[in-house]
Length: 424
Ligand SMILES: Nc1nc2c(c(=O)[nH]1)N[C@H]1C(S)=C(S)[C@@H](COP(=O)(O)O)O[C@H]1N2
Ligand SMILES: [Mo]
Image (cartoon, rainbow, N blue to C red; front, side):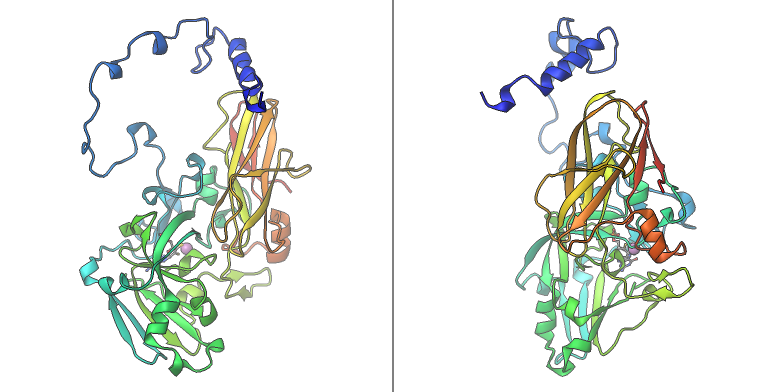
């Protein structure tokens, strides 16, 4: 008999249900008590359900209506230049549905029709070109899954534990399968002979929205893996993610992923725009700032249990789960600590880590019902290990906002509730 068929974990679950006999908590009824959900014919079995086309484009069922993006009102003065957060505490797997993927706009999400879409490539190119949406569809396409993390993700946690929920501490991230044309292909179409030596050249990319969100990208990245994307998770980009076309800059901070992409200019230096000087730079302890901190370092977070996803089943079998990612490549290992970093166990990766994409991890464990200080620690293919909060502060001081990739701690209490805490 194979191991899976032997009575083990499931017997344990039955045992815990029997122990809870008499309680009315859902899922704990004894097998010997008649369960009306089994013995009685239910309403839904006596009528017809909805026909096809009841919802030509489906929405999540009403019972999942709390799995939505949320913003933090006090963070920004209004919602047009603001951010909201992916409900990572309630999702599983790795692909983020567009409908609940965080949004970050500097001047609101604009509505741009495909017919009105134009992409200009100009500057130090042989032939300046303008592409329509239909033109883009005629170049060879690629498909890639990548995470997009705002550099400000976890930024509110520098000074101390602040926001109570993985959605708010780590939800400025999404992970989608993009379809598009490589920027390299389009630059090649315009021709880069005129640019001469490419090693010191840059591209400046900007969007069609009022903010334009212009950013400079060094040429070697532009010619490497940057994608001009028009589909996400198989369907058109949603308006809020840059319909009809956005830039995908794998592993690099979300701010460079220009939405409603309208222009790529080949230049002989960086522009030093607002978004790469007064914003998205990292102020150090001595008041000077680091710039060009493009890559998102390896990071992880436990999504369940977490403050918005408490343990509701008491002690016994417990699935601890979370997400890990690195802008430097693939995640190779994730460790989990239940005691605030004193001891570590290696988690199971649901799939081998993929480059610059979210990796799901699990630790199938037995919870003794006692306090836990839960932490996850990610490692990537470069050998880099996610730092503790203390290590990060030693290097960077406390004036930073962006690029906080420190280890997160959840205090899980005997009640199963969890709280954002700091362990130093
Ligand atoms: N044109 C344009 N592109 C933009 C922005 C913007 O406001 N305008 N915001 C940037 C920032 S700061 C981030 S983190 C990502 C967020 O992408 P999302 O809204 O699809 O999550 O888009 C980037 N691209
Ligand atoms: Mo961002």
